[in-house]
Image (cartoon, rainbow, N blue to C red; front, side, top):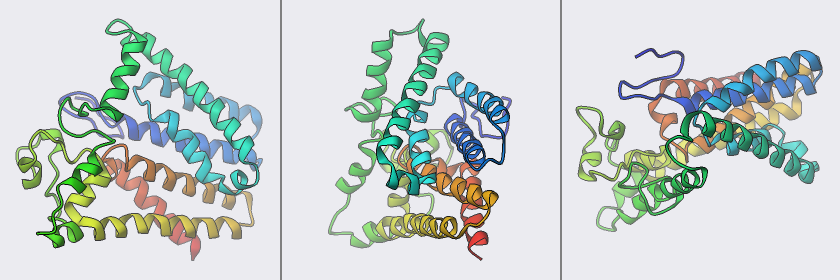
Length: 278
């Protein structure tokens, strides 16, 4: 297997969603730099084209949601002043993303199923009754399944979890999976970062983890309000967008916990926010 910056798997595929997230952050960074007149329109257009085109080659449908979310976080002040303009921009982004998705479908999938079948299949394993891997939970049911398994007989487990690594099983592909992953065989309880944190660290751990990100977001907002230069404002907006991306991805996959590439992006984001605040 040949793997670049982002993790791959000997079973095929890799961390395409994190690569797409990184590309989206680069796109937003370019937009911020152009908006602050740090780069010209020609350079912005050329770099944007180079950054956007690869998104059409990857099966990363979350990009349709990721781009508006990152922009909303990065330009939260503009969104508050001009919400209708933002909604129009978000709609345009979704349309462009849909075109890129259709391009991917024509190139990669069209010989296997029709467009309607592809959309139906995507909905079924994300929001329907089918498990993400055919069985078990999906992105909509992973957290409710955790709540269903809690009991008043073991309140401490709900509060503090079962310990680091208890629910991790790498989709069943590691030789020594966590004991909870084995106990809930076929459920794939480590599908999302949100559910994984709840199983391993409980409600208290989840509050601490997401509280850290929310606190970082407020700090980044203060940094932006205090920023005096174009470079400073651009950096603050990119960091806000990065936090928004990580919050969204925590409900999309477990990458923020189990992949070094995503953990590095989050750590760098929080570190730069703290450095800028000082």
